[in-house]
Length: 136
Image 1 (spheres, rainbow, N blue to C red):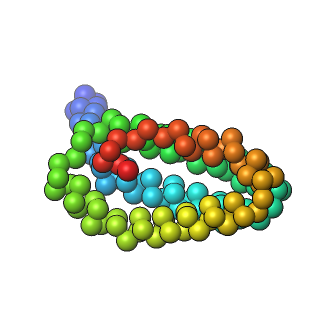
Image 2 (image 1 turned 90 degrees about the vertical axis):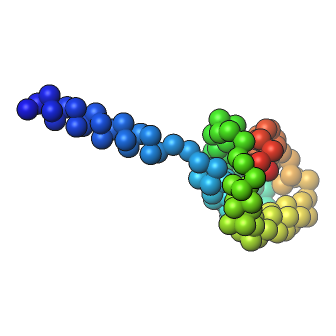
């Protein structure tokens, strides 16, 4: 009896592990969630002190993005059907994220060089992304 239970548990674990693999959709959704967190962080930047607070959060966001990019790079290039489905599913959300990102970056830039200097190192971490073409 214990051997049968062990076999059943191992079989269930194998099924669960194979069902938990990454997909293009999951990676894209995780990156958009992370970009939304980036925007929320940037919305809170009002001065040098809030920029210092934000820089720690931005470093964590950069780490998350690096992890997501690694996951994206581990996936095979999606077929055209998958690319079109992802674009259709996420186009509106991606446009909104991009619009907010542009707005936040312009607003933060207008806060002056002191704020920019505080954020520079964290922003450099974000710029290091080397994601596959399908992921951009």
